[in-house]
Image (cartoon, rainbow, N blue to C red):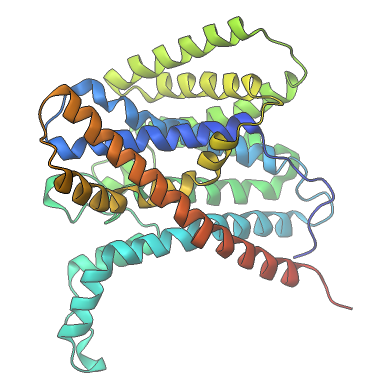
Length: 363
């Protein structure tokens, strides 16, 4: 690999801030588990995932608009994929190890000699090993029967992300046609899934209509490129934002991924324009730490629930319910921010420096 291309893409404030808000939506959604069965309307927070996927499609298109200008197509493709692996995989593996530690410790404790390891390997450990390889499998949790969830439940979205990155990286081999080709492949996969109802779980997973959200994210990049200098009033943006959130809510009711993709795209477009040139410290921190918040919020709930129990809040009454949710969200965000500054950011800095040393040829 060679040095970085001369064109550098800058972080878009609105997209970064929306990442943080999407993470908060997911945290709120999962905080419902404290109360057992809850009203259907509270599923709205799950739509943070749909926003994440649209953002992902946008960022992949935006960040690779100049890639390969000074390198071969093969090197550009490899450079992109390696950078995505560095960005996503290490922290996810740390979160997986944290979540699955008890299973590995029990396995090692039951094996008194290296030769016993294979004998004590069980289907649960095999499933967890698949999580590290981003291979979907039925959940090992009986309460999630029928779902293709890793042991770290939010990781199911990363299985889709890595799938998208692989397709996108291969399409980069075709240079200026990469976005069109990637979009075509994803749409074709969804069409195949609609025309041929796969009986096996993997077939349904890899042809899910959720892939359309990546396509809409790439389409958003084209809209963004053509409307960068467009001046819109706050009233206009507010109206578009309201339409986006209304569509997000209606799409959530029926789980229509096409409607959700359109809604998330409108919301992302509004955020891009609404926060152009606007710098907000708390939202920036929230956006920067969004990945850590997303991966570690369920583990943070354990801490939050100790606090809730200590304070003696009951799971009934409007005031108690609101307070319990606020405590869980506050702890999850705080833990995520700490993980970002203590683990994620230093880890990324180290890995990127090593990649640069490998990328820059020595003389």
